[in-house]
Length: 148
Image (cartoon, rainbow, N blue to C red; front, side, top):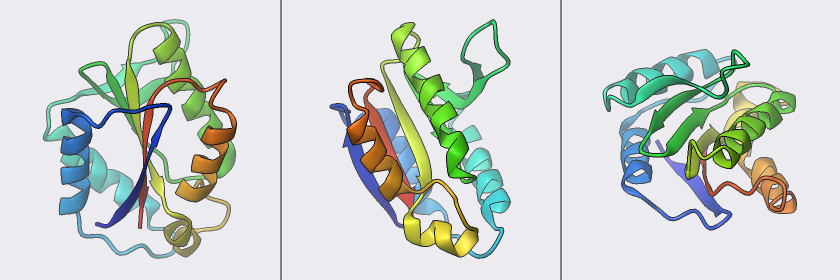
């Protein structure tokens, strides 16, 4: 699968980022209306093969998780309504500020792919712009990936 990338807040490309991009490169998927559930399942299954910790708890006081965690890196993917992507950014920042992670990989759809799947979805181009505006608030180094 082709994708766009952006290094936010000084993200340094790592072994984990390389493994994640290799997995995404190996996936063949055609975006179509309401296909995000299938894409989530495919990515979940492929990342599980890497033996990364799944459902890493953000805080013991909440029932919030990130999908994967390994070597001080949180890995999240989100293919739904853009209003909820800010919650993922809060999770990332909280994990970073509490010292549980040093960076994050956040996978979303590109604007073009998002428009094929549904309306009002989180997309790479908008999220990249928002992260650059709020870089003093969301300070965690993030590798943003937009699936095309």
